[in-house]
Length: 124
Image (cartoon, rainbow, N blue to C red; front, side, top):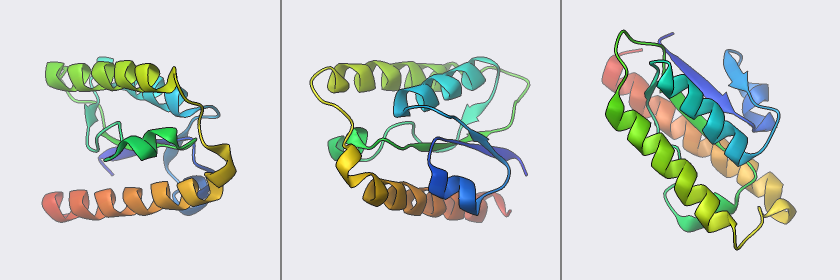
């Protein structure tokens, strides 16, 4: 397996075995991914969701490719900008804990879709 899933979603933890589980917030997942990208891992899935509403989720799962020989400066820029955007957006809003079960399911489904696409491109 040439990738890892970084997540704080307990539903993902139940389905996938080889993950980096972050016992923390959406922001903690972003920071963990940032640290990996700075060490040479590459982003497979985008750190932020496809809409502003998904930023209110308490859960996030991000796929990274295992460490490579070179640091990808574009990926560093993406993760750093994602952290900035998340912090900026969440200054005015709290995560939506009331709908956390729905967000967990949505995150799991988005992860499955991203993994299917990744595997079809790279023949996993």
